[in-house]
Image (cartoon, rainbow, N blue to C red):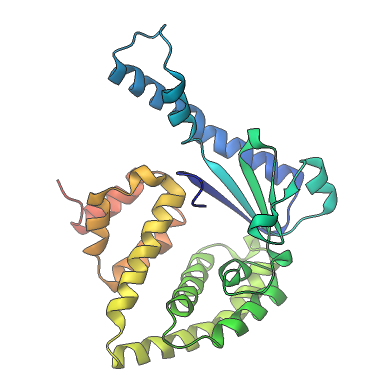
Amino acid sequence: MQEHPTIAIEHYSSYLEETDILKSITRKNLYWEPKNKELIDLAKLEQKLINTERLSKEIKQQIENQNPFTWILTVNCSEKILNSCKAQPETALGVGVYRLPQILRMGIVIINQLEDSPETIWLKMLGNKQVAQSAFQAIEQLSPDSRAKNDIIGTCVKYCVYLRNIPTDSLTLEEQDFMKTMAQIDAWYEAEITQAKLEGKLEGELRGKIKSASTMIRAKFGVEKLTPQVVSQLERLNDGQLDNFMVRMFNWQQPTDMEKWLSELGILEG
């Protein structure tokens, strides 16, 4: 993800279908076409060029570098689909990671194929029931002081809150299975938080939530929306407000939705 300034994430909780890939391409184009025009118009204005004049190759490349790269996260994917979209294994990133032809600026991560390691625990929590349970068991073995352990469990709880707001008949079987195990996760997490409060470790947890919220803003709205002002606003949120902020990020479609919410809290400056 560090290779590109703007990243789009698509998650599919079952087998990836051809229509899923086409929808991902469409969604990215709906974002990029008006954004590309906006960047070109702005560059011409800054260069004092008229509409018929062309930008330099260097400026064009700088704009193209902001064309999002889409990572499709899927529980599984058939060889037929991988072959049909000419996906090639990205061995440098490990087993289960594929890149599509360069012109598409897309990659596929097959969660069930990922090797078991500390680096893949986050993604394996998005796998099917067996893979997610195995990942959770690995998380339980981490030290209580582990930043990754607390962040992952906290994210699982937020995901459960998000799923609870969706009609049951709209959930996939994998999501329903995930919900059934959340009582155990929630109880265990609450015990961890209680212990953290007793030991005075919530300050570090708060910093972790601010970092997670910042990552979500970059992933959904682009790095340009994570301005110093927004970072300052996040730092002024309390623990409960940060939790609420990250849950709402799943449903916000535009940066203005985020700004409106901050404004209603009296957090937005200026």
